[in-house]
Image 1 (tube, rainbow, N blue to C red):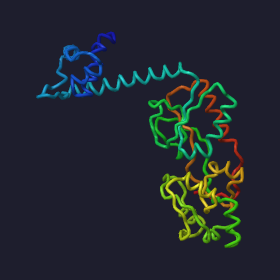
Image 2: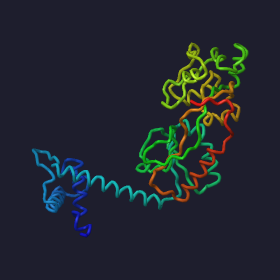
Image 3: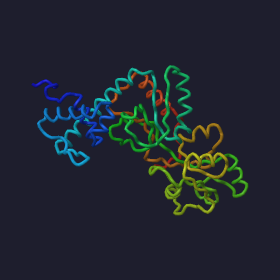
Image 4: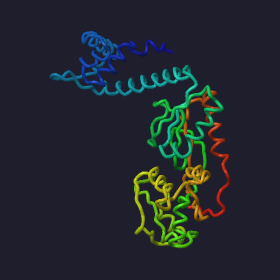
Length: 316
């Protein structure tokens, strides 16, 4: 079998070709690679001689790829990117014991940050960097080790470990509940919510449970909105609930610390079980280093070690 170096054009000519093909310009490629335009032209002639085809059409003050040039551009771009990813991966393994995790601002604020503090107390030699975003990105390319996302566990090219499901129930501040009891009487059933100030999320994840969904599953066809307040941000909505502005629909795991410290209470026992859950994601083909494996195991243990489910849960 011919040696690899005999089958490929010189490496420098491939790099020069990729720059010219990307910029569609010999001049800009030369500037990027910090060589002369004549040097770039020599590399392109070298690779064209090796292949026996023309890679560019010379136009008036412009160039464009030939069909053969386009095919080579696709192959070279893929190959060089693959090599670059491998180099980044090797370099990252030589870095310090750092972990990067991505999640939404809401999840970070109401669940993750408190746990990260516990992890740092137990493992002070490991630095954790938090990227607060809910956007899906290529974790392997961006260097993110883990991401927490809400969904059904079907993300391509990612390993998804279930953290916990999502029960959704009404919650409010103790002072709001006291005020409601004084003005309207009890707040113990879905029917009692007709006189409550409901806090609505107008911009939400498609998997999230709305008040409309809530009332539909508990036998009501309309959502009382005459006294409602509307928000386009879940964190602001929860802050409003904590301030005593009304009743919010909360996810159990995102609200558990607020309930434990008394900032929120559950006036109703009933809860809906969403068919979406929170998952810890990581690149499918990236081997875990000892400290990242330790972090994954620790965080999953934290996620799965909470109190049992409410007795009054209705599955969606």
